[in-house]
Amino acid sequence: MVLIVVIDRDGYKDSYDGSVDLIDSIYYATVTLTTTGYGDITPVTPTARLVNAFIVTPLRISFLVVLVGTTLEVLANEGRRIMRDTRWRKRMKDHVVVVGYGTKGRSAVQTLLSNGVKRDSIVVIDPRAQAIGDAGNDQMAAFHGDATNRTVLRRAEVMTAREVIVTTDRDDSAVLVTLAVRQLNPTAHIVVAVREEDNVPLLRQSGADAVVTSSEAVGRLLGLSAVSPNLGEVMEDLLTYGEGLEVAERPVLGREVGKPPSALPDRVVSVVRDGKVHRYYDANVSVLAAGDKLIVVRPAKETPWAERPGADENDD
Image (cartoon, rainbow, N blue to C red; front, side):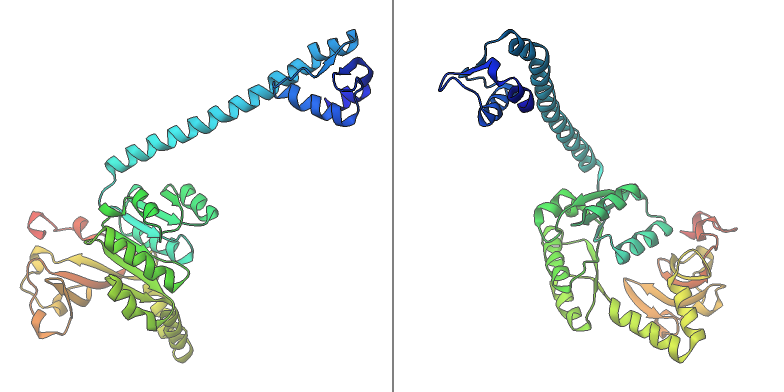
């Protein structure tokens, strides 16, 4: 429009000095398209008036359509997001919150899914837009923001979460997130990944129920693979779900009550009784009792205990 006015500047009159130059053309185009229209520069020739009627007016309408349309779109999207969040919060309870959707976070989510946790009960928090997009593509609820901010944690309904998995890139961030989560939810089971072993006591004092030292775990696996390649391969197999062998937890079946762990077909590693983990050779768990849970090594594609032949209501 500025170009049109400059070309036909003799058809316009400026009430200030009578002539229209480039600056006047820019000014006129600006106030006209934005519908401000002070009237200090006006078209006076028939050509200029026709240009304003058939070119400037459609441009002005287009500008208004874009302005109003964009505003309505933003308001509509925000309204839909608020409605979705409201519906989501009403039904979200006993869910799992995963802080950080990097390599560790994705592996944790994949393990949860492999063990029967539903996608719609997993919520991801991450400050990176790309990670939020990846979580959305994986059909999980995701919130963009820093988990050290309690507002972000509240949006993810961490107050009613059953599990919180913290996989931040920095140990100091992990400590702050753990403190914030424990303050908002005193009963949640918090699992935290840290890089340095020295930070483990600090995480436990901050409220973490379990702390995994990623750097030391990787270091041990590297050492085992160097000293004994076969042992390293077996350990890697145990840590990989979906193929080979896997470590799993299951309840004691009714027909197994009263038997020693060594008599079971599964390779029992530990027995969980009254919330305490006992080694399979511990005299306190020499005989299995109802309500015990077993940590076993089994084939990854083994039939779940509830679906095995002979499992009935007395196996609960």
